[in-house]
Length: 158
Image (cartoon, rainbow, N blue to C red; front, side, top):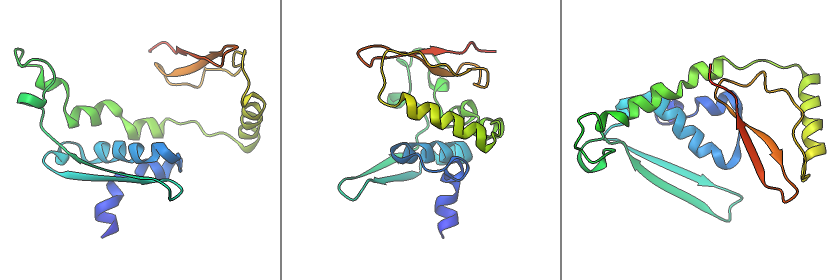
């Protein structure tokens, strides 16, 4: 029973592990990616709980974008085609993105974690790591100013 109800939504979690608050949305992403337009007309329950103090439950319904729930004013026939569950699934390319990850050895991971430890809570700095391994179009932290405001840059698209 678990496999039928939950397996379509747990693939990313099985690949990347727990990401705490983001896990519920990451698993929704996995569900959309694996199920696509089959979600139209279906109810999806999202449930997230923290340390036991607070929990959130959301019920979503997959809809075909037409009429009142389509993007645009309906004057253009292409408006409804711009936002579909299937298009979201295709655009996300979750499997391809996961498959394109680069493996790192323990020493490389330890060095990255040590850099994070040194920078934790710091301000007025620019990160020194390379962005060569980032995917084209990815956003990355480019600066934290003296007031802890974060600035981001984007790696050029291919």
